[in-house]
Length: 198
Image (cartoon, rainbow, N blue to C red):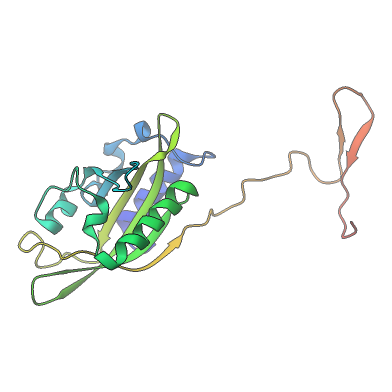
């Protein structure tokens, strides 16, 4: 992840999530992510697979010179990339896994290319995991055409699933200690020893 906006949003999401697979939508506090808000959005996961945008930041609306709320997230992308992006969205919601992607945007006939970075983070909504996705599309620089010409459909250049930074599984007892069954005091059920023999 290269862009500060996405780094901040990911750190906030990770902090809210804790040991859970994803935080609740209701836990998102706009004041906590005010620097990332102009580049952020929330997508609803619908049965039709359109992925309607429920909330959209002002800088994203300025990219297309139009309000994106209620529109399909897939419609922001080139026809060739829509199927891939739908698969990426399913990776986020089915695997409850964050995804970061490289994106290209263009505007006007000049073809001024703008590099962007996409971040997709799963959210729960009333406990349901297949419900919402929090995301951001952060530009590497402010394009001179922003607010003057609408962007052409975005192109996906790369993507990867963000792996957890540390394992969630730990031994509750240190290795080498006896595990005693509560029903049989003093009688060991399992003893763990360090070593390579099975």
